[in-house]
Image (tube, rainbow, N blue to C red; front, side, top):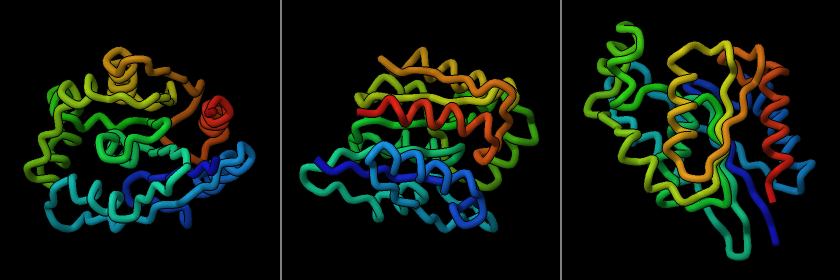
Length: 194
């Protein structure tokens, strides 16, 4: 059976400008899984709905017959992976540094962050509490222990609320996909895929 993995980058990122995504692609290849990099048009000048990023991904998503599909996302890419799970139903999701911009997070994150979200993402009240219990896919969550309490809270909450999910903590890792400490945990998770 064929296996493919979609790799969704973080905000304003691409495999062309962050070497970590290419390392992750190599990890998938070593496991016999064909990596597919997703390029998104990040709109950061005008207020938009976050769902537009999900639509961009779904237009590029294909699940050929007799193929196992995995989806890995980092930061905003992780939100996109999670929120598209209902339409993609992959074998597994790998949520790297799941962004703390869900409706339940906004009162807990720094005011500058929540103001930025509200300014740039009009009508994007996305409820994690409503999404999480509906997830049926195997979920691996990765977070660096130096990313801040907001990301830590979101990762632990995801682990608690998504049935059967696993949490991996990258010791000493910040919010940076190319950091070797972070990539070590990503490789560990990919090695567990069936």
